[in-house]
Length: 54
Image 1 (tube, rainbow, N blue to C red):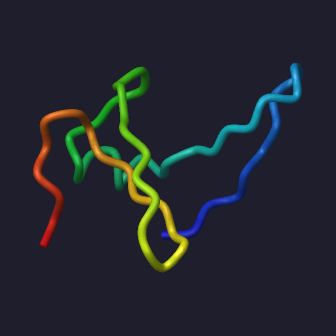
Image 2 (image 1 turned 45 degrees about the horizontal axis):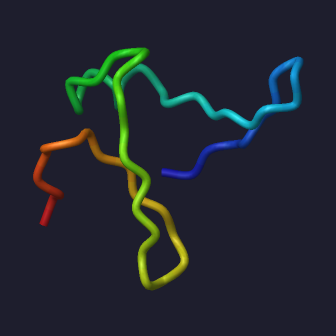
């Protein structure tokens, strides 16, 4: 999934995860996530303690 990085009124970056993905993942607004830098330069998000998808 590709998303557009936006900025809030304070200039802080953010992006929105579409509702259908949140439902599929079982995530909700305010959940803690971990950013992982992948060898190919992409980023992955996961919730602490979740196994990565194979």
